[in-house]
Length: 173
Figure 1 (cartoon, rainbow, N blue to C red):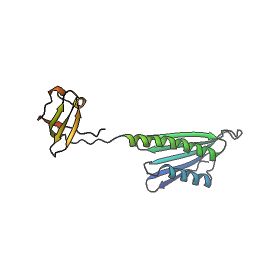
Figure 2: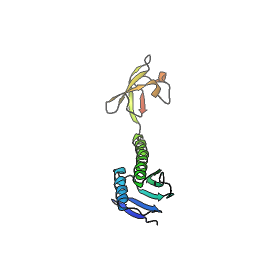
Figure 3: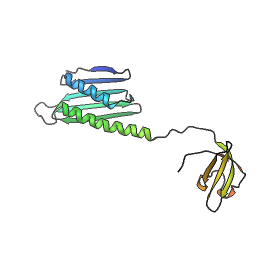
Figure 4: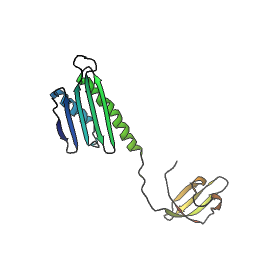
């Protein structure tokens, strides 16, 4: 009684919808396809499989099972919900998947990508030994603040005005 449907979504994603011990109704299929489209507006998802299963036909409560397996490169998200109707099971399962997908996307957005750039060159223009900071003038004339904790390769006390230095610049407050 399993009727799988594999569909290519906008040329990027496979959707498989299948039923076990149940024929997938056209309205369920349409609802699932719509929810998948809402789930992945950025097209980062590559595969979604939805399996609807009818459990014990004698028990109405929790007899309708929806399982979703979604794949974003590097992550597989799985959710399963049982309800008293397929409509509710589909809705609840997609809500759970949406929560997990947002966590993955948020985690990806929060990671900075650092490029390996060669260190800048400059000359120490001012040092305030008592306060623990100073300034370096870059080759292009820009002054850059530095704190004693950012010094590597020598101690802050060894730094004096006029010294040639190499530095990596990072944004700061």
